[in-house]
Every structure is written in structure tokens, then in C-alpha cells.
Amino acid sequence: MRHFKAAVVGTGFIGPVHVEGLRRAGVEVGGIVGSSAQKSRQAAARLGLPAAYGTLDDVLADPQVDAVHIATPNRLHFAQVKAALLAGKHVLCEKPLAMNSAESAELVRLAGQCGRAAGVSYNIRFYPLCHEAAERVQRAELGDVLHVTGSYVQDWLLHDTDFNWRVLAEDGGPLRAVADIGTHWLDLIQFITGQAVVAVCADLRTVHARRRRPAGAVETFTGADGSRGESAADSVPVDTEDCGCVMLRLAGGANGCLWVSQVTAGRKNCLRYEIAGSRSALAWDSESPNQLWIGHRQSSNELLLRDPALMSDRASRLANCPGGHNEGFPDTFKQLFGCFYDYLAANDASAAPPFPTFADGHREIVLCEAILQSHRERRWVELPN
Image (cartoon, rainbow, N blue to C red):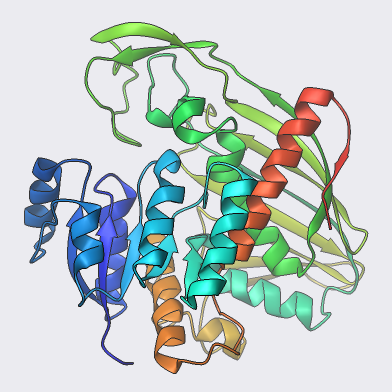
């Protein structure tokens, strides 16, 4: 692979995850930039990076930086991605791509106009057994897809003392649980089935209408005892959802249901799906990511353990360890980034990108807007073609 240099924008939870994944994928990380010069210096020192950029402008002015990874709060994505594209950089952005579909549509158009590779970090696709599931659906081993069900649940916002910028609509957008984690499930199901969601009906709920905001900043997934708000400076209103249910219809006629929650005690980060077909079924759980359940009607069910020797070529390419050597969350970023930079190295714009694109990111935002409309109007909403 041709040598590339990347820079990461964002020093919170996910920024360092990008740094590690890039290094493991063989991509040089030129530096990192945070919301302040101090945070940039601290992150660069902690991660052993050669440069702590003072500002995003410094990153974009560096001619040696080929690609920029955006891992900042949601409200910043549009402006930062746009600036990076206009500076001639390739971009890989954390989801959501932007705060609304007008912004994301503009970024899709701009990426095409600039001729830059543009991806969105839906990393869960890159568990090897999720690619295996997609391959089995594509080979029609399941038959016709009848229905899909699943959930994505966490507990890090269970208490009213749990606070993060994501709970505020002005920082994260009007949807939170659906947009933050539900979109991972929705992207994954559409990727595996090869079918777009065409209609939704949603029932969402805000468990804590007010949350206690601590005096200092709170990072994502920090703390475990529910005491983070003891030094709270104020109580703030919250109108983003903590949990909810979304019924859906797929383009091929299948129906389904997603349950999403950030207030489920004991579930730290659990995504599950089950896909039922006319011949067989598949089920997978992110807390046991190295096994895929395969259900049959007239023979014994199967449990496929992640093993490159037993999987399709498509899935085996994403499994770097032999069977019995488990791979997990950090490996998904390594595989996503490997696909992104291999695509850059191939320098073939006519080839289909092997990663989630800005068009995928835009579609997810359109889907979120339909879900919010459905919840507010208490009815089914069809997505635009």
C-alpha cells in the first residue's frame, strides 16, 4: 500500500481509537488536534504522536497530510468536513455526517466535486462475521428475507446524574439514542440484507426530562457509580430520547423492529440482530462477536465460530487472527481503515468503495429525520426514493 499520512481531529473517547486503528492498519498518524492547544498537546504526548496541531487550519495547511479523520462532537462535523474537502484532503468522519440532511447532501455533492474519498465510520460492519452474514444473504442461503429484529442497548446514561454533550439537541441533534447507536444497527441491517429501509414507525421516550450537569466536562463512558452529578452546577432540560422502538419496512418487503436504549442497566454496549429467511436464519451479538448463529427448520442449528479457514473469502479478508484467537471492537476500526486506505492506494475512482460512504451517511440522516417525524406525528413515514 502506498504510504499515506493521516491526522485526527478530536481527542475524546473515539479520537484515540482512530489513532490506534490507523497505526494498526499501517497508516502513519501525523498528529492530533483537540478543542484547545492544551488538549492537543496532552493527547499527542499521551499517544506518542509527533505533532500536536494548534488548530484544524494547521492540519489542513500541512501538505503532508493526505486524509483527515473527524472525531469531534456532531455539531462540528459539517464545517470541519467541508473545510477538509476544500483543502483537498480525503475525509473519514464519525457518524453522524452532519446535523441534518441538507448539510449531509451538501457534503455528498462537495466530495464528488472535489474527487476526494469520503467515508463514514460505521465500524460495526467490519466485524468479520457481519461480512459473513452479508455474503450468505447475497448467496441466497437464507432464501427470501422475511423479517429482521434486534436492539442496541447501553446503560451509561441510566441516571439523571449521567451527563454528556450528546444529551443536548444543540450539540448532538434532536435524536440521541437512535442517532448515536441506532444508526449503527440500521446501517448494519441494510448492509447485510442489501435492502434499504423504505418506511418507519417510531415510538421514542425521554426517561429523564432533566439531567444534572456537572461543573466540569464529562467524557463518554466515564464513571460507573452514578455519582458524576454530585458536583452539578445546574439542572438542565433534556428533550433527546433515552430509548425507543422503531418498526420498519425494507425495500424487498421484509418488515422489522429495532429497540434502542441508553438506559438499560448492565448492558454496556450490546448490539443484536436476527435475520429470518425462508430457508434459514442468522443471529449475531456484539458482546459475543466471534460467533454467528445459523438457524434451520429441518436440521440441527449451527454456531459458526470466527475462523478464516471456515468463512467466505470476503469475510476472511477481515479476520487477521486464526480461529480461537478472538478479535473485537478495536479490530473493526483497523479493518475499516485498511479498506479505506487500500481504496486510496488503488486510485480507481470507478471502483465501488469498500467502506461506508458519504452517501450512506446521508441516507442515515434522512432515515433519522423520518424516524423523528414518525414519532412526533404518531404515524408511519415513508422515506424519499
